[in-house]
Structures are given as C-alpha cells and as structure tokens.
Image (cartoon, rainbow, N blue to C red):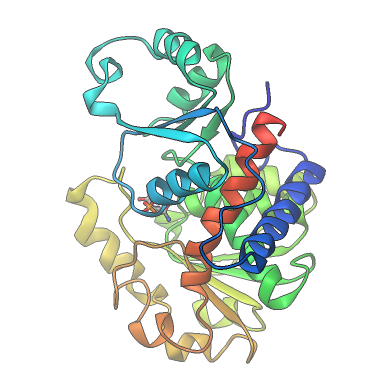
Length: 308
Ligand code: CP
Ligand code: NVA
C-alpha cells in the first residue's frame, strides 16, 4: 500500500518522481487543443473519497478537479456528517470506506486520525492537512519554486511567522530536497522540536534567527502563513497577533531578500496581517501559481499512490 502521509516519510526519489510527473502533466494539459479531454485517463473507473473535518477551498477543489481530469470520480464528505463524527471508530470507518472507494484523502485535526485511517484502510490514504503537517502544499510549493528558479537544492528559504503545520512540511522538504531553511518568529511559536531534530539529523539543520531582517538576508524564497491556524483556539488570536506582528512580510522586509526572491503563502491569507497586499500582489509573489500547482502536484500524488 502506497500512502502519501508526509514528506519525511516518502523517499526523496519518490518525491522527485512526483514533482517530475506533475510538471509533465501540467505541460501536456497546456499543449492539448483548448477544451479537448486529457489523453491520459489513469483514474478511469476509480472512485476517490475526499473527507474534510476542517474547511477548505484549494484542497477540496484541486483534488476534485484533479480526479475528474484523470477520468475518475469523487465524493466529498464532511467529517461532521459521517458516523466518524458520531463515535464510529476511525479503524471501522477506514475498513468500510475501503470496500467502496479506491483512494481516500483526509483533512483532519489530530495526526493520529490520519495514521489510524492509513493503518486500517486497504486503499491508499493521502494527508490533506493535519494540525501537524501539510505535505501536499509543500509539494506544490517546491514545484512552483523550481518552475520559476530551477532546482531548489542549495537555495535559502526563509519562513517568517508561526512555526505551524505548513512550516513543518517545509522542514521535511528541506531534508528531502536539500535546501537551507531559516525560521524567524517569536520563541513562543517555535516549530515542533521533533521536526527541527528531524531536519538536523538529515543534515539540514533549521537556522533560527529572531531578527526578521537578518533572517531574510540573501533569501531566495520568503514564506509565511496565517497567524491563527484552523486548530488554534480563537482565544489565542490577540496574543498571537501581538507576538507575530514584527514578522509581517512587507516590502521593507522583502528588500532584505535577494532582488529576485520569490514570495509564497499557501493561502487563505489575511491581507495586511501576515503579509501586506503590496507583497502579495507585488513582483516577488507567486501565490496563485502555488495554488494552481496544488492541482498538478496532487494529480501526481494520486497516480503515485495508485501506481497508475
Ligand atoms: N492552502 C490550502 O490548503 O488551502 P485550503 O485550506 O483552502 O484547502
Ligand atoms: N496553517 C493553516 C494552513 C491552512 C491551509 C491552518 O492549518 O489553518
């Protein structure tokens, strides 16, 4: 069974294969006559379940469209409407779903839910975000960087803000794709030590610098994300905003990066909180390419999982 649970649990060779296939499929789609169906229908006759226990725009739409472009069918399920949300065990849900569908994508809160789903399902399971990681996003981000600037290996990537789930997958990618990663943010919102230790053991220790201007110096890529994630309590909102305000990505901060540095944000963004509109809509920004590449990268992830 080939699941796609995280970047650090997928081999660098497989990750590279996924990125390459995503690029090839994107190009093939561009090259076909407008409106013509894709030649390649590797998911024909397959049913994909998309389970959401949290809101989503990009993940939901890009997976749904991606499956259809490859000739398959989808069902989008809200966790709250399933028995999963009313006491049926994850293991039983996984066993039952496996009798109906060929692939399961799940966005959930606890990582344990994803892991139990993968342990008990007899079909592949894809991580569509948990409180701890967001691997599909970072596959799209690596693809986007390389489209614009060539190989990401050896480049300097700087994360400014909350050491959250999206950062965690960047730390994994630093180890697997071989780039330098710097974190700048308040100590209270540092990334999980487990992930920092993992990257260090891979020979890519994450640099931590509390001074955002110094951290961003010479960056090839500057990244940020929301200051309050979906799993964070709303009661923490004001405290987080106060702590993270010095780490806002604005034009003054971007001026410390390389002149041709890229800016990324997985979206949804809170404009003029974690990043200013001037940066989001400015010359460094590739945020909408990132969003588009969710589609291409996840199509390749699904083919990898199904071996088609
Ligand atoms: N970036 C991302 O995963 O967006 P959604 O929450 O809209 O899926
Ligand atoms: N860190 C954010 C990412 C959303 C795509 C969250 O978990 O809410």
